[in-house]
Image (cartoon, rainbow, N blue to C red; front, side, top):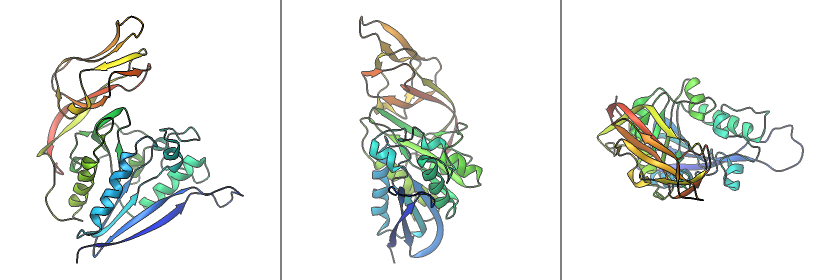
Length: 310
């Protein structure tokens, strides 16, 4: 019979030795299917400026309630509540949570949360999806892989290889022997959670926890080389590569530039010098920009794989 049992548990990250004050932690939502099968975890809200991921996980939960789910699905829709409540990428203790995994139960609040998020999912599964979206002014369209290209390709976005960073949830999971990916989708003017929901459902089909074929493009580019634009000076950021063009080919030439607001001169530019590039990150423009802001990113595919394939 279709449908699953859903339970919610508050996981406290508060150290046992702390005296006084409030609690901090996160909700763990578990969807249990009617028949046995694997367990897959979806985590989001690691950064506080990427709210679309939380919307996706609640839509995923709604889709699973009446689905013929095998096994179980773990959902953590708000892994870093302090950062989400502040609406910032950096946590209130000035740390980036996705550089702190596997965490430290005796560390700062961010380290404590990272420790309990990692421990909670890793004790229950060896397949972890760290769901990220773009930000209010930045749109993105790719999935980072950590040693499992078929799992990354299942999400339906271009796959970026070889760019793991120490302290990421997926980095810590892969180092501990688990399979993990970090998809990044939409953001900026692209507010539809649909691509994220479709990707999560595809992962569950690959895991054989849901029936049916993969939903997405027939082939997925695999990218091992990135070209990223960080302006060397502040000003007004302009671009011909709009968020609507994410995932599409980019012709060689100038695609982003910075204008001096005092005289209108172009003071910095981003030029794609080679053919074959694909647009992976773009911003709403014109936009005030500071030196060092991430403004644009393209990738150069080395091969293609079938969705969920090798």
